[in-house]
Amino acid sequence: MHAQAPISREIARQAAQWLVLMHEQPLSATQQQACARWRQTDPEHERAWQRVVHVQQQLGGLPPGIAIGTLNRQRRQALKALLVLAAITPAGYLGYRISAQQGWMADFHTALGERRQMTLADGTVLNLNTDTAVDVSYDDSQRMIRLIRGEILVTTAPDPAGRPMRVTSAQGLMEPLGTRFSVRQFDGTTQLAVLQGRVRATPVHATAQIVEAGEQRSFSDTSFGPLRMTSALNASWTQGQLAVDNMPLRDFCEELTRYRPGRLRCDDTAADLRISGGFQLDDTDAILAALPNTLPVNVAYRTRYWVTVSKA
Picture 1 (cartoon, rainbow, N blue to C red):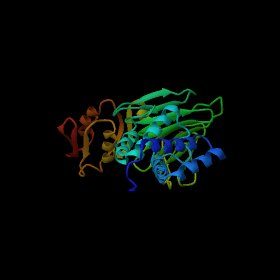
Picture 2 (cartoon, rainbow, N blue to C red):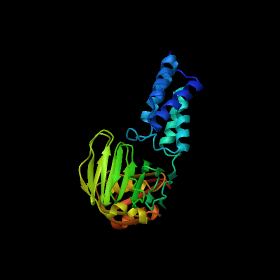
Picture 3 (cartoon, rainbow, N blue to C red):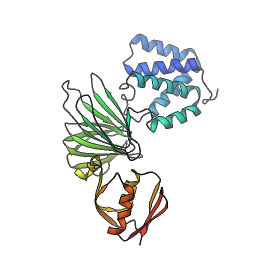
Picture 4 (cartoon, rainbow, N blue to C red):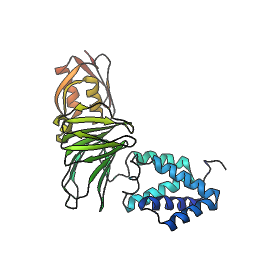
């Protein structure tokens, strides 16, 4: 039978149940034998098993051993439903997967231009930047924050129970050692900036490195980028400001795009102009209106949501 052919709902449900059980806790010898017998009983059982395993490996971008084990009961039920859907109809799973990755199932999220601050159960302060989604999972063994998209600033609090704090992104795991740090999810990389303390960063397929206060590093799932310096400017968004120092105008416009709907384009003629200062993020139109007062540029509105900045 073709590998993409549908699988019955009952067989898909059984495969999903075995997979989630395996990740929740180590299987006993009896359970391992039962799972093996189930897979060998029917070729459709094995096909369902291989399909749900493939989906689980792609889901969430977490390091091995973390993706399912840290989910609460509600998330585990949602995961089972997704695995069943993937086994029954791969095409249907694709649309579900896109929505899940965009964060609609997340515990906490912000809209475009919105920022949010919250205090977690242990006293840790979590700031969410624009268009950000996170899951938070605390249990008896660890405190886990999963960044799905966007950017967060974490100010950790000591935990009376001694549970380690862990932050995950699509590229790896970060373990703060009493600290204040930001994590930003890019397409294919994670940016870690440490403002206080130290953070151990472990890409999915690379050796861990320690990032110290005042340092910033980006990493993929296989390697680290160059070490750079960072400062409090990195967290200015928590105060509603975009603070920049000698930033190319193209990069500045890209940052503004994170906080406003529509398209903001910087023409090549103005891309290399430099800008410095602090800008109030709650009124991006005012920022654009002020640009010609400080730089030799024109700001042209084709519509409210289609703006081009070019050299005057």
